[in-house]
Length: 288
Image 1 (tube, one colour):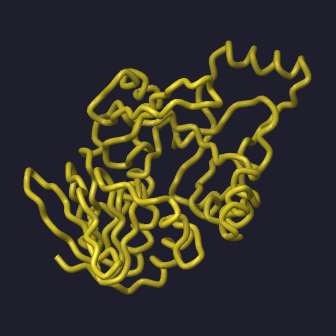
Image 2 (cartoon, one colour):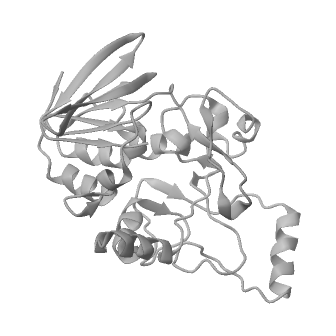
Image 3 (cartoon, rainbow, N blue to C red):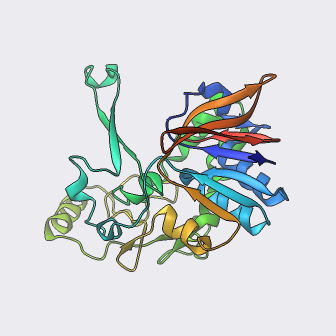
């Protein structure tokens, strides 16, 4: 199958050196990909579940999309329940655990890291906490790579555009985006007591941990919408799932990136025990 522009493949692919995928044409992956999607008039694009926001943008711009996902579909009703992920913490068909190397800063302890194996990736099985991180993290990335596009102020625009917050509407939060964010619907008494105790000890109350300041104590917002999980599938895939321009391949593992003349031109995919090849004429972006 010939593809004319972008492939974003996920699942089982070979590891790509970080230095080779940090920036594309001088821009971070997420910003570059969304801008490329807006400009693209190509007929075929591959995307992965982890980049569903880019997929949505490409289909809006008349592109055909093939989505490749290692896991199965996002249909289990327990996954839609905010507390439904708890029974799966010890293991489920929807994720696998990876073990880190010894961490010197943690007395050489090793940690288990869960990775989603389902349509929607981690957004379909995680704890739904909506947390962007600290501005200093982004600015440190900018300093490390010498690229202004990685700084907090620049990437904040992308966060705001994607967000549909049910409480905040300001320069830090959007209300029209497909990724729904809201406050917890139920708070246990122990949490309330903890917050008041910390305030009594002098820690300030923080009503928004995503406005650039994470200092303080308070409740974190969640990627939920009126009591239900809002995964990447809910936000970006389901609204266009019946679009004829979208094809989805589930339980398909990307096993190889096809390189020709030092350029990635396609991927090999293991589907139902057989290897299939898909090619692109322009760009391939790997996500994990």
